[in-house]
Length: 248
Image (tube, rainbow, N blue to C red; front, side, top):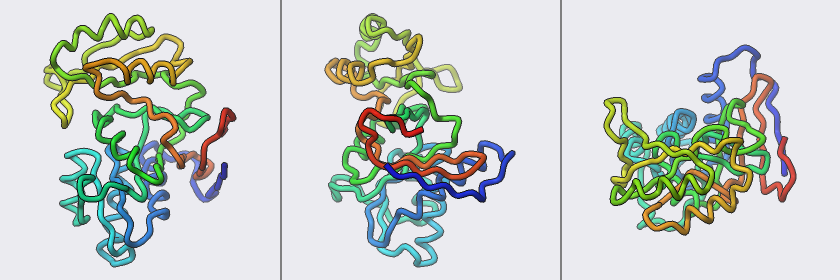
């Protein structure tokens, strides 16, 4: 595991500035000719925008992006980033994405923005998965907030007692207008609260993976290679698996 700190980060900055610094820091890992996964969310978008600038100036030539959501696809197209699809490029060199929570073992919860299924497919195809966050996303135990679980619409209520048996209180995610939120794949999201956090994430992930009708969940375990954290005292870069230890 390695850690780098950039001391010029200023104290007193707001969360949006920290997000920008984390997202832009990760772009330094991108090299010409790479296939780059373009993450969804308020932190990853800063990486997408800087990447677009470097593509336009020719600093990063030969780059093609794999967007993790339709919204990112639209933004990347608007910004002029050449795009490809996983059906055409089965392996992604580097993905830059955000997270809702990051544990000391570099496992994360994702899906607050609703793109968890596509994000996980891209992450699994990536040689390097770089997570960019501000320090508020660090947590000693995953599950301080909701764990998103993506389900097909058919029979979605049958998952509620199953999730309760796992220790979760699940609620259907609603859009701003009060109707159920629908993912890019046409599915629904159940936001699951685990009292006291998720103490055994691998067991929970295995149970969710085995359940018919559940097509994805926000536990990204053993997928992350790098975490870039913007703090008020500097940028911290954690790399590699911690193997039962703690990154911080």
